[in-house]
Image (cartoon, rainbow, N blue to C red; front, side, top):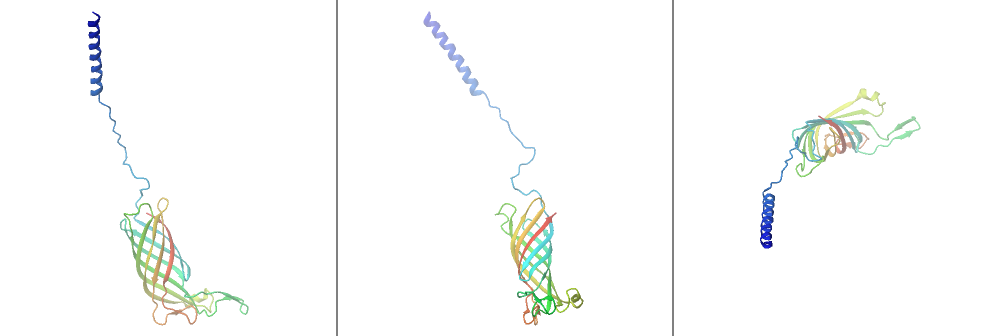
Length: 230
């Protein structure tokens, strides 16, 4: 009797265990699918596209400091059309002022003309390695052509008085250059570049210092451009 009861309890326990395992196997896990309300974007990706930019140039060359303005038109992510001009002094040697005790004025020995340069150029800029480099910094190469205006005023006259006798030369020239373009905060932009301007004067050139004619009004120009994109 005891053996029979033991066998019945054993088979009843096995039946319950099998039912538990079947339920555990057949039970399905719940799956939750998350779908963001807005598309996800990578950190650092530029959100605001810029079609054009306008700003100022601060320049330094052999002739000293200069100031200019620029306009950039972005054709796409790699190609730009540019327009710019700047004004600076023009010389081909160091010009040191000395105090003349006889006249009571500062003078530059042997100087005969005050010279000023104003190049106006239309150019093309190509962004380099646009797909290879991430972030906001983009290196570029640039070329440009346009007229340049050279103003010469006689040094023997006062600064303002001499403009009555200004002589203006118009020459055609251009530049090649390289630099780096980068975005700062928001829509502000900036670039640094180095350009070589070739502006031939022709003939006997033009003199700032007597006996030292200038034949190329260009040369190497370093510039920092700061502007606003829109």
